[in-house]
Length: 491
Ligand code: BG6
Image 1 (cartoon, protein in one colour):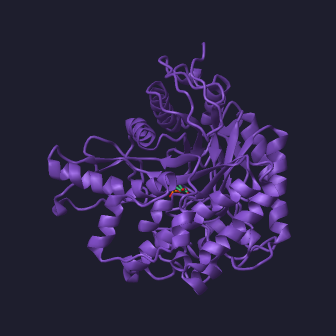
Image 2 (tube, helix red, strand yellow; image 1 turned 180 degrees about the vertical axis):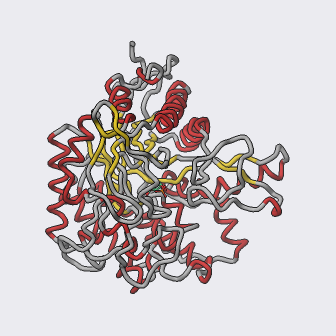
């Protein structure tokens, strides 16, 4: 099919968009998958790595931390990517991946987070991962901080509540840009930066228990993270001029539960809580609705002149995760659903949900893509999407596999909406499914909540051989990539 949508990856300047009315994916679309160090690497104390906050979250980010790492924490061994990365990357290459998103464990590079010199063994590990990706021509997409603040910074500094973390993080970023900047183009500063509103320990390394954390401290921590993210962008301009820096937002479109204006306003407030993070990253200043909210809560942020200057270092692109949408109601008796991906909300009666209560809404992805593009006019990157489900390993044609038609249906329905958004004229750089090789869940630390195209033989009780098996979706995704999305219908 003739491609009439031309984007360059020079995201400094706005692309000239000619919407593709046939809705085809652009020729340079980056297809791939995503992971996070703490959920797949394991080797939590090997290679000079210090403990991270994940090592004391044995039951996931939704549960309280433990005093110290405990053997029941599946993330300590993960799925052993630390030792098996050549085998894993070969599987990604077999699917035809164009891009692989992974995170660098901060405490592999700076074991406590506040050292002045990095840990060479940690840096060398990621050299080897990059070598392997290069071998197959797979573009790396690196998350600098994915829910893995060094534990020391949480315990000694109260995480991002402390202004000191800005300097520690900048030092860490500078080391990464100096070491890998010549071979890595796409970088994300903080995974789902807005999730700190709801999970201050997992997302922001804030040790004060959530119920005791003041809003003053929470918003000051958010400010520090935003300044740190902007400082990373500035450092990249200096040390890795070809790098493209993106922010990363947990996207969850919020619909009014009813057509009442009050519910529409409740939905707008919920959207604003998340938009604010993108607004600062893209525009370099705090939006008025955010300043009003702070004022009404009696919060006075310590924002220095230098902070204001730093924030002007805005991002090249906006990335986000998308799993579900939610609803908002002005009626407090409707209550908040306790289920879903980190952010709260009221259940939508028109949607079905996954076994973990995440409401499935492919059209919501098209809505988010249009909202973000209209709002920010920055290229977008969908860096997480997928279905967490229980899989059963079975034998078919002499091979062990998983017949995961439910996962294929979920991904196909979402990709069809991505294609619609492309036809709407939205500029999308690529799409990486979450957990392309099964890994430990972030919210519950279960192995049984699987997202991958590759099954990993490991179970909630820690048993299993860690062997890898291709699921039915493996070949489906391979065909989708090989046809640049044209195979969606026929598969
Ligand atoms: C995102 C996180 O919120 O959702 C990932 O960035 C996480 O780290 C993913 O794994 C899926 O969530 P869960 O809790 O099902 O693993």
